[in-house]
Image (cartoon, rainbow, N blue to C red; front, side, top):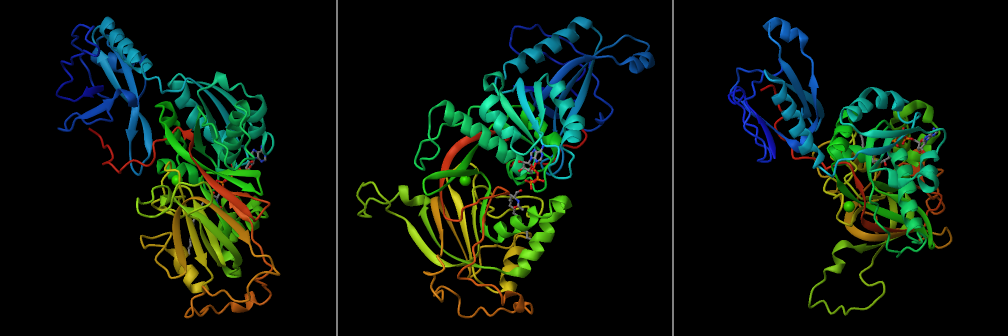
Length: 500
Ligand SMILES: Nc1ncnc2c1ncn2[C@@H]1O[C@H](COP(=O)(O)OP(=O)(O)OP(=O)(O)O)[C@@H](O)[C@H]1O
Ligand SMILES: CCCCCCCCCCCCC/C=C/[C@@H](O)[C@H](CO)NC(C)=O
Ligand SMILES: [Ca+2]
């Protein structure tokens, strides 16, 4: 149902929300921020109303020398580039009873929206990003929650893994409709692990079994971006803006999301929702952790250093393509259990990236895999083979413009449901990789940097949503729609609402 206001309808506005209310003539006047002279109209959907409340407008009443009863409707207003703001439209009525009826009816309509959270558990990482988590929450988010009548229990974390452990062992999840994470991707990872592990424990599911059927989480997770990359927030709502996130939570958005489970020899290691990166992104993260004091700038410095190092790593990647379940009636593959359909690739790789979502972030607005989907049960496996520095630079550059970053001879991408990686054992590693491109001379003048590098012994590490994994041989399996966020994915760009 829509709540329509238009300057031509303002003087006689018909209120008939449920059929049980009599017609009411409501004299209204829009706030000064709206231009009454324009011909444009505007519709506010009830599901995008944040709150309605009676207010005082003494100044206006004095100017008009008449007593006016006023109520204000706060609603979601789209501005530019997926940014949402809370805007108010104020209605003036000559009659107190009519005003109260409007407020009551709107509140009744809001109470029918059962997807809206009423009680939230909020965790704030005071040390994420530029260390502004607490301020961001208090100044930008708490007022929106208060306005929407949401109750919160807030925990400012005192150590790494505080939020994870609290969710795993202490929190009374029945008290809440959702969990809010104020921080970056690392903090989100804590919430993810705490919540998913708790649900599996409560349901007696053993996470160490790579083929275990995991139980989806009923509680949704909201992300208030206050980290360095904030790629999960950016890729699920199109912007890293705390107020926009708060409003997606208030309106009760729900976005299912795939989660990768990562195992090593049958032992559970971690979950990942965005990037699992070996080689380049693993090395960037390892180096950046040494420079945490630099804040978000640490990624730029480490990215530059890692690019200059130009390391590559030998290994074997096996994967199960996403379309193997579909098959074809004439493919002669009979229904049998086992590992049919696995592809195996041996090679030397600068980067092995598994992007379970686009991994868009301000540095790379279209992300590592622009067409990856949030909830399709697959991850995009991107293999960047050994190539020249110049070629790798061209590849990286394409993450920042509209050119296709996969359109290089040394890059291949596969949409997969599962994959495995095994680093080459130094004694078993082939001396030459037959897959290397014959015409790819290293055009870089900095090739001396590579002289001490032994590509038969070197191993990188895995960057798992911004956390380092301590094993290199891993098995990864996508768990379709294991969690839900207070988000709706990136909306098709609409014309931003201007003053009406
Ligand atoms: N009170 C705390 N003290 C120290 N570390 C904490 C605390 N609370 C959480 N952490 C840890 O801080 C790490 C980084 O936090 P967060 O992800 O919020 O910021 P970031 O690393 O700057 O951002 P991004 O992950 O987006 O790059 C997380 O791995 C989290 O476990
Ligand atoms: C010549 C300019 C090259 C610019 C290349 C930009 C490519 C950037 C791609 C960034 C993808 C980030 C994916 C997100 C990963 C997060 O999980 C993680 C934790 O926050 N962040 C990082 C940086 O590892
Ligand atoms: Ca996916």
